[in-house]
Length: 198
Length: 198
Image 1 (tube, one colour):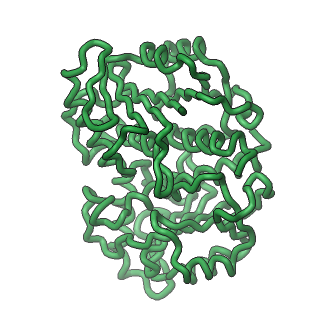
Image 2 (cartoon, chains in turn purple, green):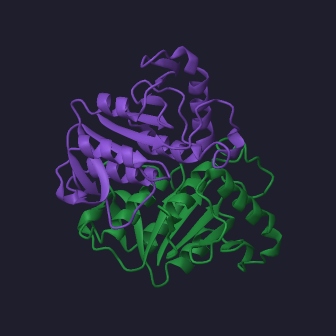
Image 3 (cartoon, one colour):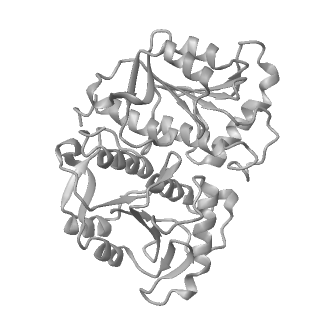
């Protein structure tokens, strides 16, 4: 099982946004939709061994469960529509209990700390950091958890939480890349067992 | 300079498509828009040393020139709007002569063969193929040209043309991935000088 947590700092927490303006008034939801795409899609196939958490403004969390997802398409607009449906089901999520809005998509009122606490159990938490070890020198863990931020940086509090929980600090390359691109590189690193198995 | 050619088999060749239905009636233009994203975007930065050709139904070619682009945003919808603007300028493109529709975006009436012929000059043409050599065993070329297909496979004619021109046949990993993900992995391979420089 591969897990990813992506923090959306400006992402909407209510469903009243337009699918026509994801990159604008919808708080850069387009960036999170691309992370969903990178998490799950293969050519004519699907990564069912992946779990993705999107944390919205440190208030709400949407969990995508690879082996249960049914209606996911690769494009940003239809992914945003699934997220909107999840936000419509928000009132059914009580405390940390989740509500399922569409198959394999769950919403809960959890913040980053709560999600990191749950997801990090039995996982190797990997912090992507420009001062980390080259990923090529790190043995791929069996149950990795990658934590990423959207187009904005981690807040100081998020960075502290992550540093406390992280087992490894790695860098994926010499250039800083978007979250969805980092996820694609991470998948390739894991698929190839650390660039050894093609 | 890194070059990519992406073949869009069902992509629109006229501007009368809706930005609200990129994954449907617009011939999976969403997939090509994600390739544009993968070609050019870095975190808070831009890859200016990249040239991307989108070949639409083997009739028209849109060229994106990294060091001239001004109005590119990462989301699919605004990228599709740039492509629509290019298609609106189609009548100004005479023969193989290009017309510039927005800064750094050019349209011409060129097919795959003509584009491959131009782009492959002074380049190392890399064919991504499941029977290719592991990319980790291949020295990164200085001026690579990667050729990819959209969500559909290469036609027999395209595959023959490519095999004829290709200098290297490589595989990026054990799983077949979407074109935009392959581009991201290719960039990472080049950025790290073949997984040696982080």
